[in-house]
Length: 186
Image 1 (cartoon, rainbow, N blue to C red):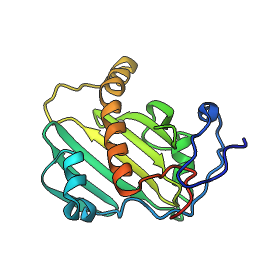
Image 2 (tube, one colour; image 1 turned 45 degrees about the horizontal axis):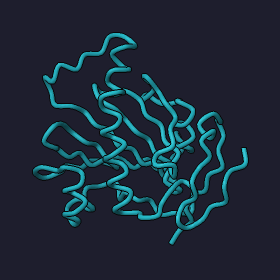
Image 3 (cartoon, one colour; image 1 turned 135 degrees about the vertical axis):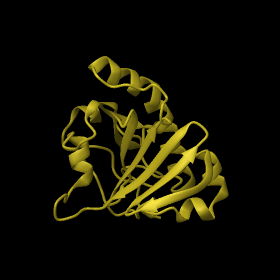
Image 4 (tube, rainbow, N blue to C red; image 1 turned 45 degrees about the vertical axis):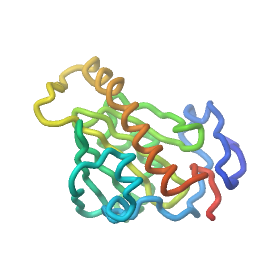
């Protein structure tokens, strides 16, 4: 599939992109997420946009933050020996996040996928870097989110994936303005 030429700011992606298993991508941009919580600790505007309450906690490549209505996990997944193409695996649903899986164009600029996961929603985004950026939202324990059928997954997706899309765009627009899957580096 031929797509738009990489540019700065990012070009709009063709709507039919979601139908293709192989996409034109570039990996020259720096990762927008540092893989820890430092961006949230040093940028109060970003922390407020994501609704962070209290101190975030980090482990390898992930930052978990509590919000007033749940938990948000930000993750950077770089290529590795076991997973040389984390974005390609997510785009083709070769991941654990594949319940009620959907390919989308996030804000028309980013290739992304959504899936019901952990009683909430997981979003994986191609940011034009080598690593895949993910945002997962999980409602608080005891919120009554039960999973047992496809309709349960669809309900979770309908309820929580719009929240995750907004969180991801708030993050990306703050730390990587003008970004997108085919955005050229600054």
